[in-house]
Image 1 (cartoon, rainbow, N blue to C red):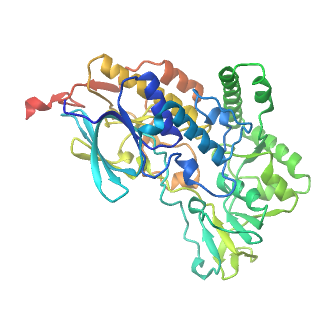
Image 2: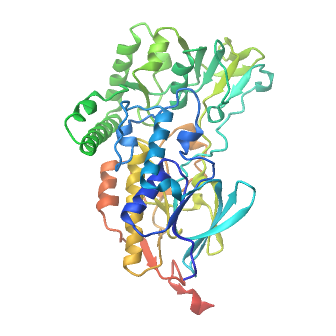
Length: 496
């Protein structure tokens, strides 16, 4: 086999990328690896997003790593606290020394002859270089870092104020006393509104409602348990508790949607009061968890709405005007600043090009294997979190599986492995959400299949059985030596 630079290349130094490094150190000791980060700093999402109030929409006992307890008081944490947690984890394990900043992956080329990846990266100074590795673990997430999604609003050029997307929040923006319209009803909007309302007059403008529930910012039971149990044991106990509650609530919503709607409505009524128009502003047309359910800590969004410190309007935009936004109803909302919290621009594998033995492979032409590998792409793992639970729950499982796979390849004398799908497996969309940001990108993402191991399970307990305890070997996973072409076992050296 040809000379390599590393055993493993990890793409991305965010929450998943740092986790990947930690898992490799523990479970594959002696393996050489590097983390390629396209930006100049660690943290991924939690360093990129700087808008006011940025926070997690999952509790940190499940969003945190399984191997490192979350020690902060707040279970629903702000962005800077999460960023500190990532940096501290990297520092404690020496992962920060493995990061190569300003290394943006542009192209990945696999050679079955050499059983190696050649990864072309662009550097901060405009130069490029190629790194060679046996395995690649992609921890790039699923959205484009350069920009968020901005709809083509009618009449936008007429608006005399400032338009901002939260993904590019100006660092020096002074919004004190300003009239701000936040367009959107998802996690970003419900985070921004109560934070901006502390210093500005804010209107949350949504085309249609989302399901939103409140949860305590501090997990009181977890805090009590921490007084009696060792740190790691207390963390694992709370993690299991929260995973179980999340799983049971999700299953309840999916199996008994009408009962779930009634329960959520009662929850909102108890917070917003009997006179608030819940039917208009917080009663979606879809069932709970058809789209991701939003979480607000300490009911902060509901409190500012109830007190009149912010306003919510459910209507469609007719056009922007010089003074603000005219709605289909005829009402004009005057604004100095419009924040377009309109979602993400999804992209698979960070947008890099992939070729396998000289043939370009589009992610959309592949099928996901166990939610973490792609059909026909050798020695390659991607980390994609759950849509119905914390991202890191799936990331930890995927990364431990990747380490098991690397160990199996080495232990049995193989050079590479690749999942291969048969023609009788039916295709389905990779993500199971009906959210607009998913539907816009459905043709860019991999597919999933209608049966195991091609079906993406949004089910943590089931994935524990399949990924942590299940066998590495099955009918779909094939193992080869360098010089063998996967798919039909051709000996390349003999053929040439």
